[in-house]
Amino acid sequence: LETVQQAYNSLRVEFKALKKDYLTLSATVPARSRNRVLKKTSALDTKITAEGKKYTLFYHFWVIPGVFPTTPQPDNDPRSPTRWASPEAKLNGAMAELYQCVSKD
Image 1 (cartoon, rainbow, N blue to C red):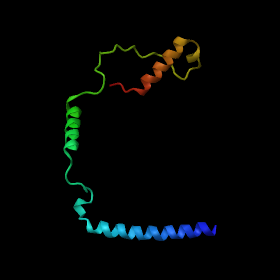
Image 2: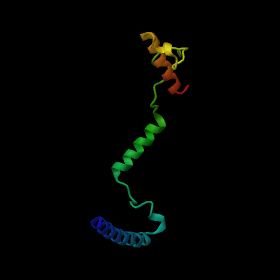
Image 3: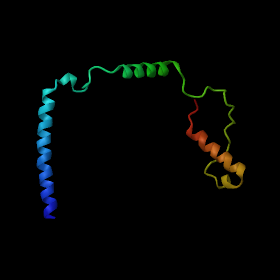
């Protein structure tokens, strides 16, 4: 226990010194540039940002409605004990759960 306490106290002293150094250094950084340490971005970062904006604005990542025909929502209770009665009932129960998870849009 004594060894652990000594190690803890030495780490605590070291932490206080590091915290003091950190606060001293952070006080020298102007308030406006604290959030933006790197002013200039590389050409690669700029290109990635431009491509990301292009795909965000011009491309639709979800499947277009009508590409895959969907089955109508099964009319059964997924919590019903008869859901496990047959393979078809299991499939209908799983489909009912999926319809609950997916938004109507």
